[in-house]
Amino acid sequence: MDTLVAQLQRQFRDYTISLYHQLFWYVKGFLDDQFTELKKLQDECSPDFVAEVVSLFFEDCEKLIGNMARALDQTGNVDFSLVGSSVHQLKGSSSSVGAKRVKGLCVTFKECCDSQNFEGCVRCLQQVDIEYKSLKAKLQDLFNLEQQIVQAGGRIPQVDI
Amino acid sequence: MLESLNRKTEDLTVDSKSKEEEEEVPAGQVVKKTFKKLCVLVVDDDRSCRSLYMGFIQMRGAFPYMAENGEEAVNLYRDGQTFNLILMDNEMPVMDGVSATKELRDLGVTSMIVGLTSHEDENSVFMEAGADHCLAKPITFENIYLLIEQLKDEG
Image (cartoon, rainbow over all chains, first blue to last red; front, side, top):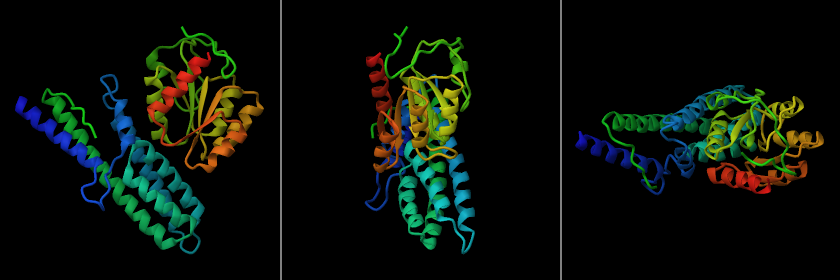
């Protein structure tokens, strides 16, 4: 049982670090320090705090991406300020939860909206959709690992990034 | 028991509720409770931001309240609610943060108002509207900690 816990804890540490750090120079980490701020709020009294906040974030991602897709679908009559407003909201919330790649894409996306670059906006929307889904899957894996550690009788290790 | 706060705060006299009930305040709801701790109003249309700030505020031992836009925040004051600190996002539907700040100051509200900004050029607009400070998003626990400490020092 101890060996299982130790293995799971090692896996958790390695996976957490991989979410923050660049693997290669051209690949950004999924998370930044703001996610660490979020983790500070999780304790025995609020064991699911991070999962709850990121769940709200992903729900809002879906809603905002839907809004952007509908706005961009108005061929020849795209309201770029409407798209830009949704991008701004997404940038704000992704920044608050530490979703580094999503936030970075929103910066580029906003520039495309401001310059009314339709093809650029469509590309950015596709990338944002991919990135938020990718982050959602990775965080779910992280939360699953946490659960496995607790169920095996271990404690979630503190990971210094 | 905290001392009553001066110039940047207003007296609060309300009935008591349990901690669990206090933690489930939906956006815009007027809740009356005994004043034992600082009351902080978070005005932001983003749910994950509100949840995060609520966590930071509770961690610092204060009571968080929520409003989804500037108009809800102004209506809370019109309904007789008061807060020690208002964290005000800017870009929100219905009424933005700068407009809400101006309207609150026109109503005679002296609570500390902190504008939460996404870019630097929002700072001067917020300050002109009557904000006391501006903070760049994303907000950290340390930001909240220092603000609440400042309020306690002024009290």
